Amino acid sequence: MAYIFLVIFAIFNGYFFTSTFFLYNQSDLRSLFSVVPMVYLIFVPAISMGLIAREINIGTMETIATLPLKTYEFVLGKYLAVISLILLGLLATIIHLFTLAKFGSKIDYGALLTGYIGLALVGSMYAAIGTFASSITDNQVVAFIIGVFIVLIFFLMGFFLPLVPTSLAGIIQYLSVDYHYSNISRGVIDSRNLVYFLSVIGFFLVLTVQSLEVRKWQ
Image 1 (tube, rainbow, N blue to C red):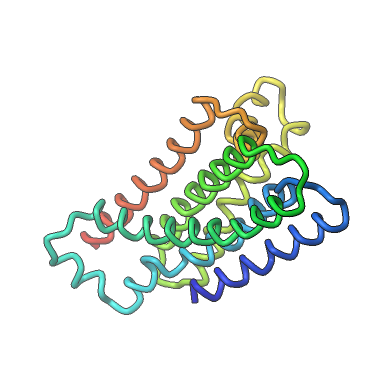
Image 2 (image 1 turned 120 degrees about the horizontal axis):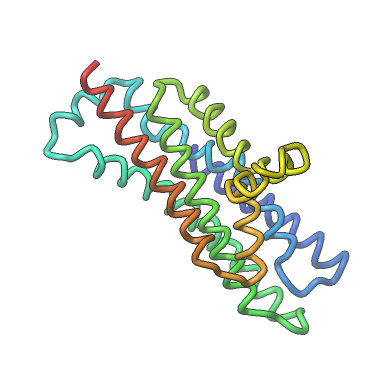
């Protein structure tokens, strides 16, 4: 199922890239870097919804618990499996670079690199959220809905800025994934942006470990 989503992801991104490139003759990947974070809102929860929920549903978590495997090692293994799919999806977009190299006039490789770094960080963050969502239910559809709901909160926070008091604007902006991704995709790799992504990833992975530890004692 995950590979089906991967194929859909590649086709979807390919469509947006080619339509923008040939219609507007843009020799960059701006359309791709704009569309992929929105695609991730569905794609990442979809490929991570069954990570742990499936194990819980078929009863193999009890067997796994008897193995000489620490909970955090199990969670990390599941998480890295999703990351590998996300990176594979990004790797598939390399074909667009060949298109740019052949038809593009001036290519800013620095901007392309930071754009891909930004996408990898956003995907990694959503993967941690999806892993957590998969750990709190035995139903994959429920895990998907929870995952989408949480990533939407982070994605939409920036849109709420005009509605919140000035005293809270700084906090809301910092929690917005789009704020940090926009900085990186523009070529500005600030330590604060990296700390944000790593902190959110770590937070949800720790929550996942704690969720499974609690389940062991139920």
